[in-house]
Image (cartoon, rainbow, N blue to C red; front, side, top):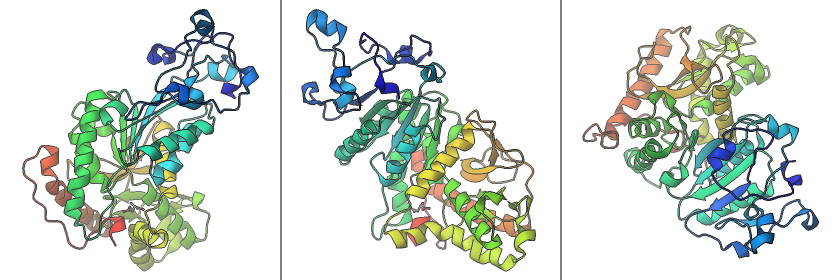
Length: 440
Ligand code: LMR
């Protein structure tokens, strides 16, 4: 456990980036939570409450010399004490720290996700991580609560936690941005209004990423309507490759796999090659034509086209709404799991012959789908954070017609947000028979 031993001398925090630029035997890590905004804590109000007992704590050397406590300002609890860790065998083999921003960090999805990120389950057991949590003024107390729980969890890989409400602060230098926070639809709210209100959030966050994030930041948009929010974010971040923006449709893929497994009477690990095409809405197309069960085409295993085209398709399309009816709120745990799956699919090589779904930029796609929208398609990755679209997929008239419907919906959504993408005046005429998953 990384916090169990201390070197004889404490060191003060200087440049974190230089500390993390290489991990050698003499590398120094600082665990810290910075409460930079809007309510800095006086350091003398902070108490240490970690697993290290008082008699294991050594007085900072510099403090002995000049009576100045080596305590960081605006810090919290145990993280106010800045200390060096003994370079254990484990830490010597760790990778360079990565910075991950999460918006909507005080929400239900994040409450599941953050602990998975901190545990190493997502980026690997040798990957130290800094979490940068973005919340709102209204949620700031809750954000502090999240940070306290992360603190109490003593994750060895969790090197920094900072919280804030300004994306220009929080996104500084981030290599991953998981954009979960969005306004939920209010009673009687039209989809056009939702597109506008959330679009403004994602336009602002796109600008902030463009200004301060790593030039190769990977952005995963979860807040609905996620495809068009991802497009807005991307258009406001011209210095970041468009390929780096994703809209989360992995939850839909997981739902489709579960339903196919149930029908075929197999465990869901037998189901592969499932694509979700299109929008994360009720026009999404769970592709059973290319799907496989135990390596055999799903259509051959299930042999019930009526079920596949109707019950199956509709069940996947409306699963989000069905869950809202049960829970009284949107899915949270399974969404967090699917975010983990989506990231892991980009940072680990795709199993041979398989693929995964993610909503990405269509320009240059090999399927004839309209350019310049964010559309869920089948991808493969070598595990370097990047991906390629899969070419060896087949289409039939049914699949083409369904894809077209989702494409039309996204083109209409795009026109609604033209004022947020720099493409002139918005004109909103959304197809009446399509809905977001939570809209039913
Ligand atoms: C889901 O698919 O569970 C959510 O996107 C539903 C929603 O609209 O919040």
